[in-house]
Image (cartoon, rainbow, N blue to C red):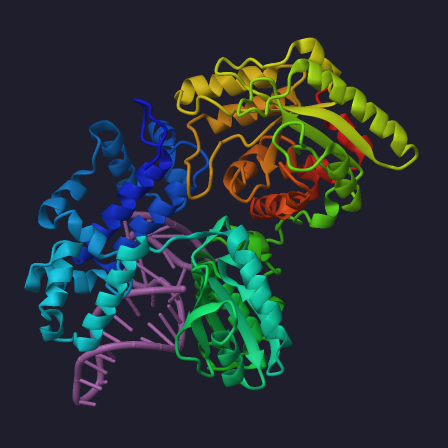
Length: 584
DNA sequence: GCCGTTTTCGGCCCGACTGTTTTCAGTCG
């Protein structure tokens, strides 16, 4: 794993991984399922925490997180102090660590894996291959030739491209939209919608869920199986079909009767955690929720809902936007009518991070500005890389001076048009927190984004101090892609997010949500934290060409998942009001 | 193991599919 190297504490992702592993070990050991579930939920809570779990634990506050109780707290302490969890060590003496990778094979759960281990001595993926070659699995009671074949097929798949990969939302969403549009146009269909994590606009997705109603369900399922994007398909039935596209994305189409369309869409939009919380609430009301309807437990009467809004209404809740459905307290908020009014794309009035051919962009200043105007924005900051950027894409102080004049002339030529181009820069924050242009030049700029592009692994304290130093600079308006994460590729660097947002609020430095779909940085948890601290958030694209000005939708998606309102987003204001929020 | 608009104990969401079975366990979402 690619974690920042420091002699300090394990980061949240490492602690979470330890609890996921512990859950699997207990599952192999035959513990009651709720105990296993509890560890998985603890792992999730740890992974999603915006603040350091190690620090929270030392402060005695970690049990404030939902899903973390006294036992988990003790185990985290052991992990911090001794480097491992005693109960996990004990279980690892019982089950070889290589057995854990066997549980990763789809279709093989803990119960089966344990039987394979105890009855056939299968302790690793290699052992499993041997057992299949010797046709030993089909001899086990309850398993047969078909089960053996399925395991063999999954093993082969695993060998080809490793365990199931997640896909960036930006790779999956266009495919999902194309398929939903084509299926909508099919004569047999009456409604098709994207559900699942793609509808919730998560950072990455495992597959794409499509929900439909159709006059001829078999024909619609067949249409997807025969679609030009489909590489392989399962058996199409009236209930739907599962296919894989040529670019390897799994698609799951489900077709239902129109009366229960709302129930089904709600169910398959998820998340699992949201649905669990929803059903728990329903049980308390004497109701039982499923994808087919809402049943009154006493009378047995079933309410079917054509819309999602009707599902939530029946449960005494305001409609909950898909982006909020992650089981992070949105049900309680909906019950109390305290859901935030989420920001919309139409609210965005400007984009404050972009590049041109002056550094590493692909379009000229004029082309980028014309495209930004066409989006209906009122202002647009051009922020090419700075003097020390490297890769031959740096901008010298002299060249930036010329750029400032070019932009002044451009603004002049726009005349009475209600549009303003901001002369800006994306300035490198050096490892000591200093910037790579002289102060006098920075003062001449309208807008300065400061970002870290070097020395990612300097350690938590130094990295935090580096940000604080940059934010104290009077010319720095905004921090760019603060965590440096690259989704599916690079972990965020280690820094104290709480200290950074506190300093940002104090110094009136904004923090961006970078909309590049590889980044989405701030992430949703940290964006919530920043907004709560009083930091004004910018939704930016970091566009390097005209086309990627569209990345605003991903910045918006993260903002909505963070529950941000229009008031919490700086560039949801017209220029006059935005300007008043600026540090200078 | 966690948690509290019935509860500090006793519950803890719901159904489909698959492969193996003559009624169900395991897995998944």
